[in-house]
Structure formats: structure tokens, C-alpha cells
Image (cartoon, rainbow, N blue to C red):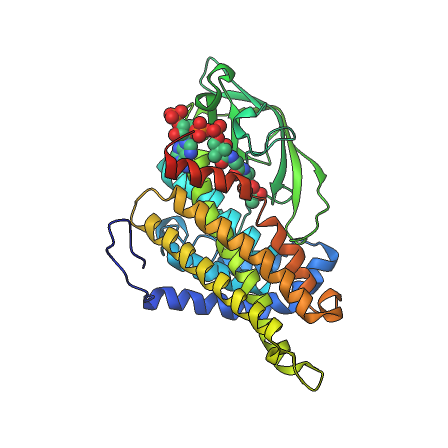
Length: 391
Ligand code: CAA
């Protein structure tokens, strides 16, 4: 899909399968999601019915093998589908990305056969919602500063106590991939990953976060009070939780880059239509040089974001390390989305600022892509460390 570091493998064509999934996503996005996006944003309600529909069409577990309830497709297909859903409504794509990337990916890579059967299927089919709990009130970018404790018992089980915050889909999640400190003295090597069933005793939901954008995606604090994790619900090897979280986030960043591209594309397409129609000083505003410069810059940023995201997805599909490329994609795409949404509002003038058009929603929704799954500052740190080898 793109040349790798040795300069091989340039192929920009999509497969029939990838295009088919893109068509499915586009149809659902246009027929079901776009018409209800304004409503869900205004009332801040979780769009459960639409999420079930996405699941029924294979969009909640795109890279999950068919035997675990997924679509059995690749990362490129995931990018294409995410872009379509995000272009209709970013909040829907947030829920989709957590189920696909943050929840299913880690279990597929590090889980046992029993864990895959038990946890992945329901989430990949969209019957249940998954979540990923890493962040805490005092630990965001510095993930190893977490305080949530998991204390090992003589029988191999763990007792978990502590709080996690900003949990996307937390209010509705059935299962959660949790990261907790099992050996605090070992810092990043003392974190273990666990699979949590939210219907079990000791799990509590806290306050829901009121948010600037992606308002239909529910976010809350969660708390564990003597929650018991059975030995068979430890994900991967004890003490490997931080590496699991980082690996899962590498893949997650491809999803957020795709989301940003979807938001940017929607803002760009609305702007193209507007500058052709809207007249000022006796001419369409698209004929003015200042507008043309903005259109050209929007197009360049959008295309660059998509190509970089496809490169990261392609590398992932090749089984190569893609941490730097995923960070490059997320950084470029999220900053492009913010810039494009900003310019789109500006070009639309009063109509851009009005809730009668979706531009202000794109502007609000774009911002989170520069924050979650690693801020732009963290992406720059990951890229620079990868390039220099320095820490
Ligand atoms: N894959 C595998 N292993 C990795 C890795 C990766 N991508 N990145 C780091 N590691 C390993 C390192 O090799 C190192 O291993 P050794 O000790 O054996 O050498 C270990 O992990 C520790 O790495 P660092 O020393 O680099 O760790 P650090 O403390 O300096 O942190 C960081 C690195 C990049 C800043 C990291 O903490 C980070 O990415 N922070 C951002 C966290 C984040 O993205 N949070 C988002 C929350 S989830 C979310 O947003 C979900 C949502 O709402 C939708």
C-alpha cells in the first residue's frame, strides 16, 4: 500500500473485499447515522440501536477472525470503514473504535482461547459494548503513575481496588480491559492486564463526564472495591500489562487517525459545496484567492493524513512494528481535522457557527482526536524517541 523503509511494495489499490466493507459502512453511515447525528449530539444519548446495527454488519470486529464473531478483514478495511462512520458522526466512530481496537485487539493478541471465545465474540458482534481502562484521575499521559492496585491472592486470583477515569463507553460496557498495578515497585513492569465483567460485585460506575464533543459516546469514571479477578481472567503474562496497553494503543491510534480523517472529510466536502454556491461581491466565494488557498491546504492535509494512516495500517497487516507510523498518522490526521474544521467554520461564516449546520459539531468533535489515545505531545514524543533512539 505504501513504500516501506526499504523502498518496496508501492501499491495504492484496494481489494474488492476492502471496497465492499467500505460500501457497507457508507450505506449505514448515510442511511442511519447521518440523519440521527444531530439528535444524538444534542441530547447526548448513547446510540445503542445503531451500534447493534454496526455489529450485525461486521463493523464492531472488523479485524476479528470469523470464528470469534468478527468480519475477518484487515487493517486497511478498518481504516476505510472508520472514515465512513466518522464522516457521518464522530461519536459513533468512537464507540466503534474502542470495540474494534482497544477491546478486541489486545485479547486477540494476548488472550487465551477461552478468553477469545468468552469476551471477544459478544463485542465483535456488537451485542455488548467493550471498554479500555488505563487512565486515572492523576495519571493520563504518564500511564505508569497509575494507583489502581491488584493484589495477588494465594489461589492466583487478584483483588482490585481503585479508580479509573475518562472511560469511553464506561456507562454501558459489559466487559472492560483493565490495567492495574500488581507490583508497584516495578513501575511499568509491575502492571498487569485483566478482563473485567461489569456485572460482577465490586464494580461501580461513577460520574458521567459532560463533554465538548462526541457527546453521544458515553464517558464515565469507574471504581473497583474488592473486585475479584479469577486467574483465568488475567490477560497475558503478569507484569506485561504496560506493554500490552502500549501495543493496543499503537493499533488504536490508527483508528483515531481514521476518525479524524472522517471528520475532516465531512467538513471539507461541506465546504466545497458551500464555496460553489455562496456568492459575495457578485461571485462564488470559491473564486476568491483566500478561499482557494484554504481549499488547497485542506485537500493537501486530508490526502496526507489518509496516506499516512494507510501506511500505518499496511505495516500492521505485515506484522511489522508500527508504533512510530501510527503516531505519525494520528498526529497528522488529528491536527488536520482540527485545522480543517476550524477553516470550514470560518468559510461558512455565521452558518458555520450556527447549530443549523453540522460544521460546529465537526469543530467540537475534532478536538478530542488531539487528546485521547495519546495527546499530540505524546505522539511527538513517541515519534522523536523512535527516530533518535534517545529517551
Ligand atoms: N509497544 C510495546 N512496548 C512498548 C511500547 C509499544 N508501543 N512503548 C513502550 N513499550 C515498552 C518499552 O519498550 C519499555 O519496555 P522495557 O522497560 O522492557 O524496555 C516499557 O514499555 C516502558 O516504556 P517507556 O519507558 O517508553 O515508558 P514511559 O513511561 O516513558 O511512557 C509513553 C511512554 C509513550 C509516554 C506512554 O506512557 C504513553 O503512550 N502515554 C500515553 C498514554 C495514552 O495514550 N493514554 C490514552 C488513554 S486510553 C484512551 O484515550 C481511550 C479512549 O478514551 C478512547
